[in-house]
Length: 364
Image 1: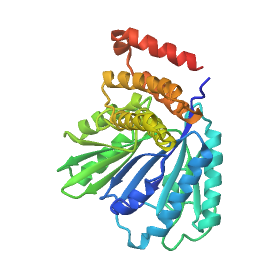
Image 2: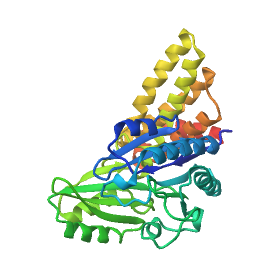
Image 3: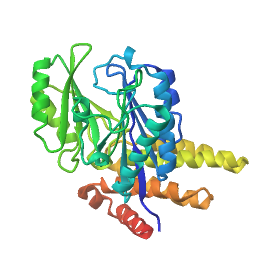
Image 4: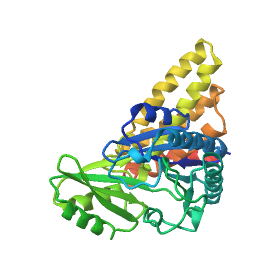
């Protein structure tokens, strides 16, 4: 039986311009995505792993680096922030327990305060539902520590369910109207929205979509454009579950990145083992990793991605490269991509879908 259980962590750093520093932050093997924005002067990294201990160690190393290298006294950017490492949420994937994510968040926050001296706010399910808005507005005090660190500020560490960060930018849209649109977008289920002025006479509606089964990316994009009376430029920040994806999400599918990560990790193992056969396997897996990461959102691409992830698990078993973490990532990938295939597509390709469903049932 394969346990379809893993965790995602999405640290946000108050730096979107220093490419050398961003390269250092993104060097860890758990990193599956880096999104940087020079206007916001902010970067969002996505990490995944089945081992919370290893994931937490990677996050602590990143927070340490950000504390050493980012000075908020010289920081400028349109996005609100309280720290050099602004937020660090843990998110359970598949059958992982939110309670385990809470435990990991509390432990990481304690380590950050004890070893780095940076005050910590807990939020989300790690703090009985506390909102980041309350922290940013100064309505609460740090849970650990007192006055903010002189250069690194404070860190918000939390645990929550998955959400999608999604922006729509409009050229020539007045900020007064942009703020009105953001307010109207908040009337949709699970939508948090703010308006930002960007260079080049652009206004951005910046959203968090927290109830994806009620308001997905296509619905949010369509509503924002309808309200603006303009065609906006969509931007996905981080990754999006395939079932909720839409404009701007090609190459940013969470489940496709899980499979790409499994392929990359297996390639690293094959390379380390040495020998001509393992070298060839490492090269093939590296190519497949890059290809899977770029998976598009159209229905045939989603189905093909699920099939490729399922095939990879069998290849890794045959090559002696499989393991619990890689199996979990691949099983989550197949299940998520298959779940995004709509009934009409499933009926059209019923033989392929039946084979996938049979394979998924065999993992249970």
